[in-house]
Length: 289
Length: 289
Image (cartoon, rainbow over all chains, first blue to last red):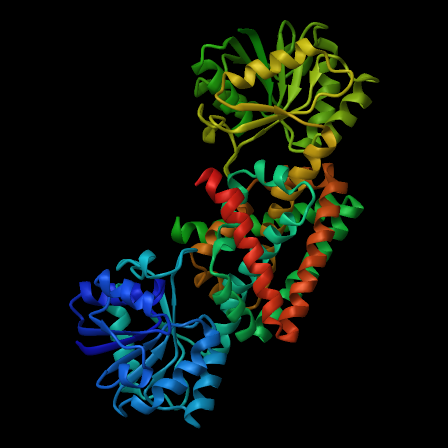
């Protein structure tokens, strides 16, 4: 059991983690910290946190588990601010969608990789954000990826693993580099394409007509374009190298499809569409739908 | 009331139209025609059609309404085959996702645009296909776009309009050119991107890992990549000009986003993401969710 959990950023992820641990009886006290006092007041009013402290260093005092759940662009500043109050035995983890940048931030702030820091990423979320959208079942049957590095202590890793297991998630481990590649492919690039497509269409002269005749397929395809813009700006910048690599591969493949359309090469298009349908039906539909 | 409805291609759309009209009591007899006799047998077994005829010219004999619901690449051959049996007073329409190509096919086959041909397109469907997936409510509260041309007779237009109205759809009219642009933007390009992305990822060495960690956002984003490859090959080729124009706009916008990521220009990314979120929340979410 966690005696005192301190969460930085009590939004969809931080709030849902708090609710899940509380529901599981896995935590005694939850302290929230954020720059936005109105968010903390809301979280307290909703019973998500027991109390809050807007000063990071005093917020972490006495905490045995610290979770940094702020947008990636704010991670370094939060670490700097909480560092003076962090107990040596406290375990600290994060929930960022890119792990290379978090590890770099930690090294920059602490001068080294503290054994008690466990980089983590729950693969869960909706296009909603904010504590009001949080709910205790968010992580049930979802995967949480932990990316320990050479310096990470086995005991700290075990405690973070246990914490996530209590939320109903399946905890897996992989390297920082593989995590960042996999997420660039399945999450970061799709978000970029969805944001980009909607923005492209919104710029069309006839955009009113265009959106008016959008059907269900468009609604599903663009759902992720309703996600939090700040969070996604941070992710694209934090995971820049992997995102650019995946984007370049995709752009090259798209250029091939363009050439096939222009040349009227139905066979090439058909083969591409068939491979895609087969892959999705096999890997995505069977597993989750 | 339609006395004898002849449907070419009794799949998701043709089958659902048959079921909807039957349910509404808007049709007396439904004849199915297809190259695939096993599809017709299935449709008859399911009660979707009353009888079938694999010969197009005899299938349309005595029909007062003919609906061509085959993939766009098969439209011209179907029109050629049914033409000898088509009564002069019969109204004929189609359901193709591109209208310029259908109008060109009709002109090529008939040598002119028959006044009784009404180009049409129901904006409805799922990623499923085949008559087994058809259901009578598919068109309820959906839009059906009719794109009459100068030669189209008002009476024929009215009869096709009435037919769709009986399925619960909202019928609207627009020009062939606007239809093809709007659909390229909201449907054809998104399908191309979804097929392309899944195919890109399937080609990655670590594609097993990649698909294993795909979350709900990816599932929604790629749902349309489970659509029928033949149908979408035909659509991309049939609406080539509009699809290429929209693809080129998108590719240019995507290149701007790439440049912003590479330069670490968070402001440009944020503005793009915010515009996209605002447009989607305003035009797509409010209307349909």
